[in-house]
Image 1 (cartoon, rainbow, N blue to C red):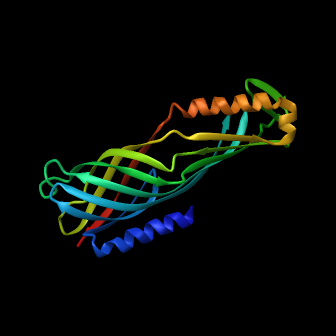
Image 2 (cartoon, one colour):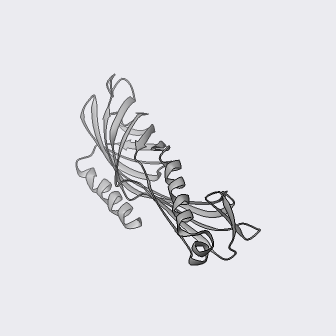
Image 3 (cartoon, one colour):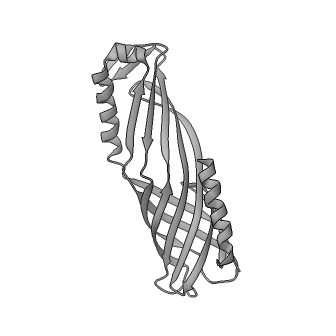
Length: 214
């Protein structure tokens, strides 16, 4: 993942040979480094690298999870300035996020030493569940934004949009938990997690940062 981000970042920096702007930002896709090229007063193309590695603990169905979201992607975008970039920074953006983004979680029994699997509680102290949700390698993006204009010097940039893609869920339980609950219930729990994620196909993207135009 880190290697992919570094490749994307280097690609962004090497693009400065034809770019008119370099920029950096932070947001829901993590740390961002990019470069852009203006083709007309109404159209700009951008390439950027995104990297995010965030973890947190939470409880779900009486299972204690240690979860992490890892994003390492390359963004390719086209910006359209309906009022012209010289008179307004407002723009419409379309493109794609390309990478292997995923969410992983390791679940252990609650304080009572039990798991709730497919609606039934099982005693399984010391056992664990591993969950992984992988997003598509290519996710279309659409949004609005401000900045990336032709004005020379430093400028403010902001983006607000969504990336579309349905995650696929993989769930594995330790053998002791499989013995206690049965593989059919483990599979039902995975299907339940998949059904839940199917409702969340849109990943919110919000970023703010600064750019420098040559």
